Amino acid sequence: MTSLHAFKRQAGVSLIELMVTMAITLFLVAAAAYVYLGTRETQRAIDTSSSNTEVGTFALQLIGEQIMMAGYYPANTSRVLTSDESFPKITAYPPTAVVGNNASLISDWVPPTTTPADVYKAGIFGCDSAAFLPATGKCDTTPSTGDSIVINYFTNDNLGTNTGHRFDCTGGNVDKDPSNANRLNVANPAGPPLQPLFVSNRFAIKETYTEIDKVKIKTFSLACNGNGAAAATDIYQPLLAGIEDLQITYGVFAVTVDTKSRTAQRFYTADDMATSVGSVAVDTGLSGDPPVLSSWARVSAVRLCITTKSQGAAFKLADKTNRTYVDCTG
Image 1 (cartoon, one colour):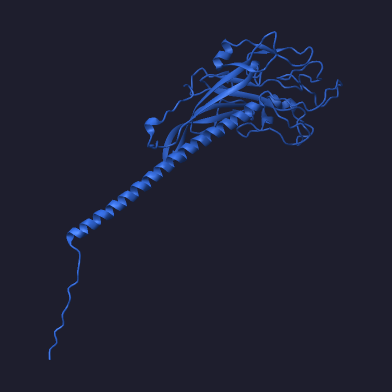
Image 2: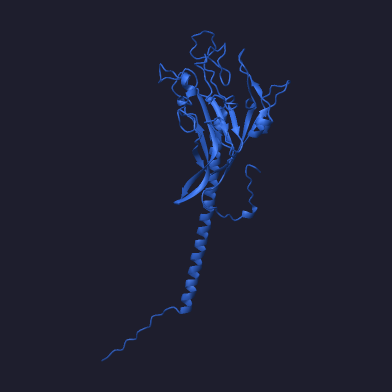
């Protein structure tokens, strides 16, 4: 006997159902991709903004710490009037060889250049829209991006220890500066110097290049030049990339008969310091010490403005029309 078996046909989907399913799937994938790309773009914009803030903050802290050191000379010993004083207390800035501190000219500090003008007569000096050239002790005549500042002070490493601020902003040891030659302890090179060592750090903006995703990008950097070298050069070492501009103004105190306040009365640019600000005699505290006349000696405050710029492509933000950016020039 022959048995007949009934076979049930498999049920499938129609072409229309398949197309609808594919359309829904593609819509979900597109929505997920849109959310992912938007989130990634926003995160990259946040990271870039945070990076700009961090770079600017670090630059301000770096220069600010140096400015707080400007004009520093350690009062490391009490004054005595004997000829065998090993560590004379000098209150003048820059210290000068006079009767009363027992520092002879050969052992005292001599400025790094023969004609330093105002550069080393005070703790602060600056150039307006130009870099300072240490080799000549003058501001560059070719305008450049941003201002530059010179910060001068002395180390504190003759307090009886081997530690101190002996290194400039490039990491160079300032004992190589010829102006510090007579201040070193030749008899005991491993010990502290006989007198504080002179430090001069100069900050400016320098055009540099950086590489992002194997692409070479032109940018500007905060750069420094220190006196930790045997001979002064005009080469600035880049420190922080993405610093687009540096604007500096200097607050000076008033010179009047009825007040001796050192509160800044008005802020000037570096060019104005040379033309609009009168010189003042630096009070050395020593009788017979010749006064140091300098307009820069009136600087009691410094204002810094730094503009940072993101590296690479700019990222789009949703409320771009509502954002306003103001640079250091207003």
